[in-house]
Image 1 (cartoon, helix red, strand yellow):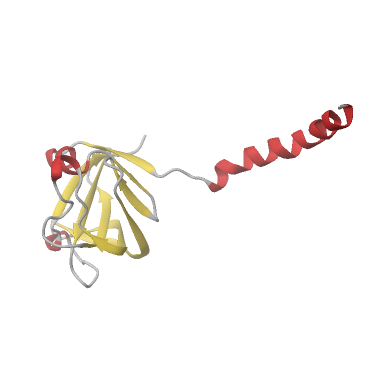
Image 2 (cartoon, rainbow, N blue to C red):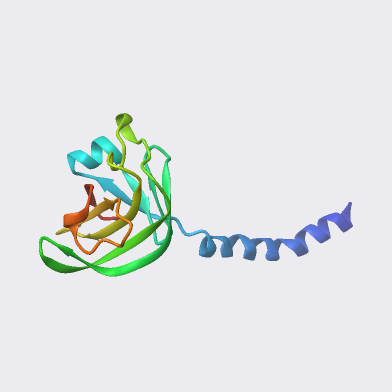
Length: 145
């Protein structure tokens, strides 16, 4: 019995180190709080990072790559992240609403939309979108805290 306890106490520092290292590998996506009527009624809050977007309903879209770091909004070029969706889809989300409603979402763009706000737009085209004119839906969120 004492040898098992001795072995346990010798293993504790290694176990503690492993537990401390886990958060470095398991980063959580940023939570964006829905503020526009469309965001509240369709997506709810979303969690987004460079790899995917997850909706309040639990549905998600994975990204295959970042295709642009800027974008045109109302004719002005702004810093943005434009992602290609790995497996295009138009998931059913809150209240039976679909993310786009006009076909499978192929691209997702995210940019600053003013003081403490972010915009997330979705697109159905085959080519990366160049501007917000091409979107099928726009959602506005409070930035992550």
